[in-house]
Image (cartoon, rainbow, N blue to C red; front, side, top):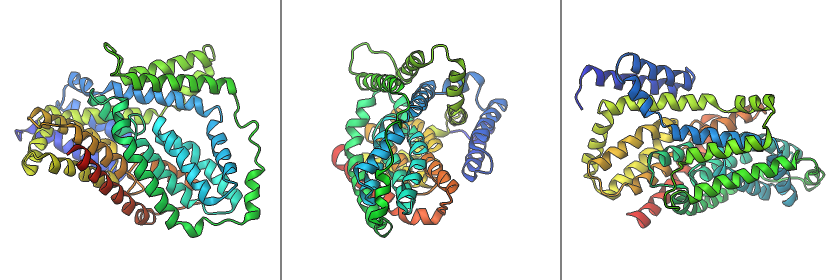
Length: 433
């Protein structure tokens, strides 16, 4: 890396932008776009280079899945699942916490963890209010469930989407085979510890438990035809994800699959309903999409000026290029950084860094990709700002007058997060190193 004016400018713009994102003084999308445009205006990265560094496959995958989840939410399926889970457990708080956490984990694995908590947390407050118990254990458990569940698949958490888009060899089934079994173990252990930690708050008057049994499930599914269409397109999406890479000559990327299936769903449910179509597109998280765009350009500015290649070289020098040491360094660095920073910009920075390590002759990159995924996704459980799902869930809790401070959450979450990383370390060492 040559320390010329352009390189120093790229590094300064990136660090200042990153600091402002972390401080939350300015909305992260605004500052990411502004920082990216400053790089282009000052000649740090050309307009053509900026466009080339935007990962449109990641953006297409996010938009496609968002559209499908938004339409699915209109069917009432999520409320129906929550009520049925409560009634199946007969209002028992411990069993209810476990049931809701499993639902959140599964939905986060197949859909999007932010959208999942957005739909399930408000329902949780309704159920816990009926049972006259504290919603805190349920909210904390669902945060963990969403992040752990999202770690287990390619589409469950933004870091995995970004990794899969950058590494063509890692398809949908690769994530399930290599991460899902580990996530199940971590999820069960974490859930057991949360039940133990909050055991005194998970007690309910038997008479009050009967209230939950009186909620009528008839009518909770607002439109069965719409539900069938949503489940059909979702099943097709997952099937195509699973078969990608298994069929010779298959050329469609994951982002294309997501958009094709979202388009199919739109054709099936609203071919001529213009107002409904506008409503669906207005609900897509465009701020997140444009945040990604700004971020890709910022990281591109570092890449074209050799900063990331230099960081990769320094990492290899510190670890001696030894596989086990490098993998553990990536895992623990990702976990600690993602606990206190947003994992999306961190992963966006790490992906080209690992790719450059491969270009320098690092033998086996696969353990590094799994280390980055596990560290970034599970590390987000450590603090209230570690992952987007945490921020969304606790913002909803605040609207219901449940105030959870940074330290109140961290004293429970951070040790559990560290435990999950220890388990991940053992797993990576035994199976990949």
